[in-house]
Amino acid sequence: MAKKVTKALIPAAGFGTRFLPQTKAMPKEMLPIVDKPVIQYVVEEIVGSGIDNIIIVTGATKRAIEDHFDVPNEDLVQNLVNGHKAEALAQIKHISNMANFIYIRQKGPYGNGTPVLSGESVIEDEPFAVVWGDEFIYSEPPRLSQMLKVHEKYGGIVISGVKIQKKEDLSRYGIADLEPVEGNVYKIKAIVEKPNPEQAPSNIATHGAYILPPEIFGALKRLNPGQNGEIWLVDAINMLRDEGVPIYAVEIENGKYYDTGNKLEYMKTVVELARSHPEIGEEFSAFLQELVNSSKN
Image 1 (tube, rainbow, N blue to C red):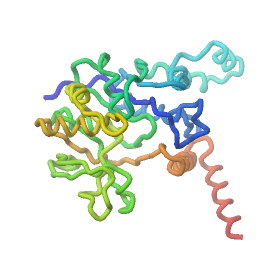
Image 2 (cartoon, one colour; image 1 turned 90 degrees about the horizontal axis):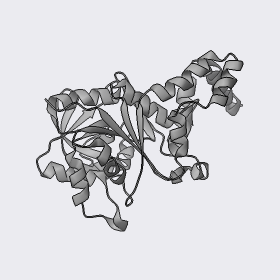
Image 3 (cartoon, rainbow, N blue to C red; image 1 turned 60 degrees about the vertical axis):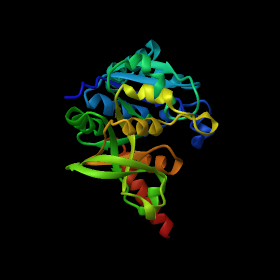
Image 4 (spheres, rainbow, N blue to C red; image 1 turned 180 degrees about the vertical axis):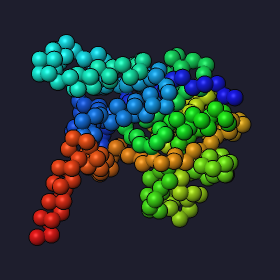
C-alpha cells in the first residue's frame, strides 16, 4: 500500500499574461467566478479530498492570495457585525480555517517544473499532490479524491484524465497513449504534447492534477533545461517512467472541467456558474434569455 498523501502543492506564480492588463497587479488565480476566486475552488477540492496541508508557490504581485486565505482584518469583521451580516462573516472566517497554508516564493528558471521543485523543503520524503491554481474540475466525489484512491491501490504517479469532446481541441493538450487497467483507470505509455488531432493516441488529456512521489525532485534536478532554460514537469515524469515508475491516468467520473486560463473559457465558466448560483441564478438566466431574444429582433 502506498504511503498516505497528506500535502498538496498549488503552483500560483505565473504572470497571467493572457489576462493583461487585469493581471498587471492582480493574480490570475484571484479572478472571480461570481463571488469566489478561482483558487478557492481549487482549495475546496483539495480540502474536500481530505488534505488540509496546502503549499502555495507564489511570485511577485501574488500577495492577494495570502491575504485572501488569511484571517479577516478587524475593520471588515466589525463592519459585518455592525451590518448584521452574519452569513458573510461566517463565510470569510471559514476561508482562513479551511486548511493549514504555507507560502513559498518561487525561485528558478521558467517552466512548470520550477514551482514543484520549490516545494521540496516542505514536502520532504513523501508523496504529494499538485493541482494548478488557475483551473478546476467540479466533480462528485472530488477529482483529487478519485485520484487518491487509485494511488492508494497502485502507487506510482497518478494524473487526472479529462475526455476531450471536440476532436479539434486535442491539439491544445497533452494527450495520453493509454493501456486499460480497470474501469476508469489506465496505465500511461506516453504523453504526446499538443498532437495533430488526426494522430492523437486517444481523446484523454492528462493535466490539471498530479500525485507525485518524492523522487520527482531528483528527476527535476537532473533535467537538462530546454530552450530558454525551461524546466518542465512532464520531462521529469517521463524520466521516472523510463526508470520504472508506473504512471496511471484516472478518467474523472461525474466531472466538468473548467479551464479558466484563457479569456473565452473563463467567461464561459463565469456564465455557467452564475446561472446555477443560489442567489442570482434565476434572474441571471432570465437576463441571458432577454439578450438572446433581443438579438433575434
